[in-house]
Image (cartoon, rainbow, N blue to C red; front, side, top):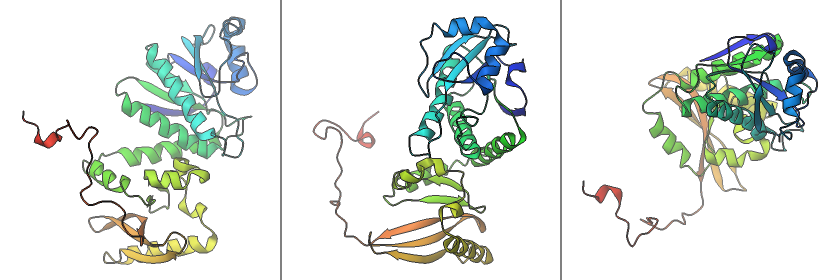
Length: 314
């Protein structure tokens, strides 16, 4: 279960562990880090001196001493430096490695602060989306591993950002559509970038080609952001106009938007519908380049010895 509250993480008494947004020395600092050290008492500093510091994205465990929980997981978040220095992946590593450490020590409940969004200046909304997405993915990969994962957030602005992120990812994952894996396989094999948006223009999925194509703009860190923020005003108005046209009739499903001369392809906007109901849209890229793949060119890892799975006898 995921929960959010606004409050003081040093006073949380219903979890096995709290997570400290530490600095690399692990010897205390400002913000959450300093508050946790003060509340835990000098014994925490003594134990931290023995740990040899901690690298960004990694996590280490100590006792909690005078705090009302059993353990503290110390993790070092990235300092925001414009978003082009692996900040997203390092922040995701903070959450993944904290959860892995909790799993290894049979910690069933833990509370996070908003890592890196204080003096390290990581944009709060971006951090919230990335944090919630990472935790959701970990919980999905490890069902039943935790009874409670929560965020304890310092102010209303931060709480609102995390609440929005939690609501967004819950909407994307519940209820599960049994046909979704089939749709995903079709989208993921496309060599052109596919960016799927909901009717609020939020990016809800990017296939591997799109993640690679837009890596310099943030890659899959764009998920949860507004597509309109990635365009100039004129393009944004065109997108909104097309979505209104999609909404006007179930027959309005595709619009030719432009020809990319450099890449020799035509680009279309396509409506996504659940039955007749419009639920979103995406861009469709059609390359004009001649196919270079050989017909029926199927290779197995060892074609001389391997029998295709569908030809094996029981």
